Image (tube, rainbow, N blue to C red; front, side, top):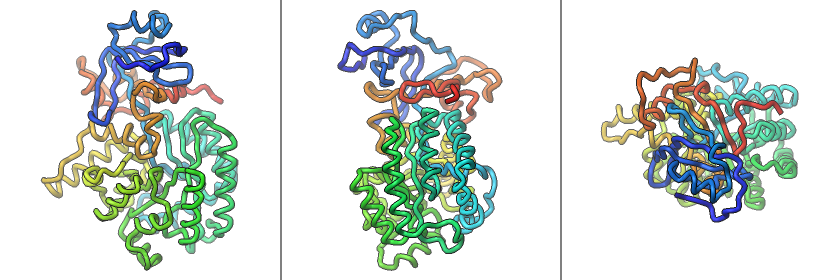
Amino acid sequence: METSEKFDTDIRFVCRGTFVHSTAEEALQILEDALLGVDSEGKIAFIGEGKDLQKLSENFGFSPSAVTQLQQHEFFMPGMIDTHIHASQYSYAGTALDMPLLQWLNTYTFPVESRFQDVEFAKKVYTQVVKRTLRNGTTTACYFATIHTDASLLLGQIANDFGQRALVGKVCMDRNDAVKCYRETSEESQEETYRFIKELLNKKYPLVKPVVTPRFAPSCTEALLAKLGEIAKNNKLHIQSHISENLEEVKLVKELFPNSESYTDIYHKCNLLTDKTIMAHGCHLSDEELVLFRKTGAALAHCPNSNISLCSGVLNVRNVLNHKVKLGLGTDMAGGYSPSILDAVRRSLDSSKVLTIQDPEHKTLSFEEVFRLATLGGSQALSLDERTGNFKVGKDFDALRVNVAAPGGPIDLIQNEKPQILLEKFLNLGDDRNIVQVFVAGKKVVPFSEP
Ligand SMILES: [Zn+2]
């Protein structure tokens, strides 16, 4: 039995049933007939065994009759973490997948993102994104917004209103020759980043924080990158960007930054690689670059749907993990067409199998390993693992109540199945109909109570 040191905690609620999660040692740990108590601050107060109900209820001062009992086909799992998602691209998710990255940005992305100057449009899109991702079990999202400060602040407010844990980034880009209506001057980019950070922090949202967001090296001057590195350092902030997504982009970066040793080196020189940095993709990073990631503590967001949809490349996750680089999963919506991390789980498994087809020596990722990447791995990649990622006493209770046999849902269970099978079926076949409740920091956020 694991308990917190405080025995005088007020217990908000207690659940009994199967809990599945990951630890550093085990990709999948299954706790059957477990009891988990959540305190008044939304933190996990204790995890024990069902047989100890009487003792736990005395120690923690709750009534055994108030315990919520899960059904046989149900389990709790940690909330899923989307380490890379463009909230501003939701309006065209599921379309525009017929071009490689650089052409795709100019043709589809920049014209749509420029519309977020209109806060009414932003409100409409961002509200739908937050609701859609929460319903799909994303309890933590690391968002790219657009270059517009007010609309980006609005995204933070909407995430807060719906109770989602979020990092929100106002995008910075002072170099964009193709679409001139969508770029800032270097001064605007710096000043608006300061304003964004200050105003978002002033809101004192408990679960929503700013993240310094250079779009990617090709759309930023070196001076701006260096300034953003300085801002992040002085304010101890998270950083997000993109790296080594496709080969044409890697070539362009070489041309734009002739004095840098590698793509990774550019960010490193500008103080943008820290243990609070998350870089999307990394499909074409060299082993030397991965070593630099490991040394600096920077993490990668693996976005397989996007990598396949835009024909960018196939990240060798096994190689990244062997280099002990932190890695989480991302949807990269709308480069990836799905807003659901369940899709990222499936595409991660598919991509790993493609690598095995190409090289039988490649060790395919197991579904348990990918489950860990979607939860604990994501929390580590975002340096939020002290707060979320698995069921540990003292962490916030970020959780999904999953009913594999939800009426009208996508899964038919023919017989009683063990928890491991239930999880595998949910990961491969499930959808939001199976996610009957979502909790963030101990608060039930799905089904919605409209703010
Ligand atoms: Zn992206």
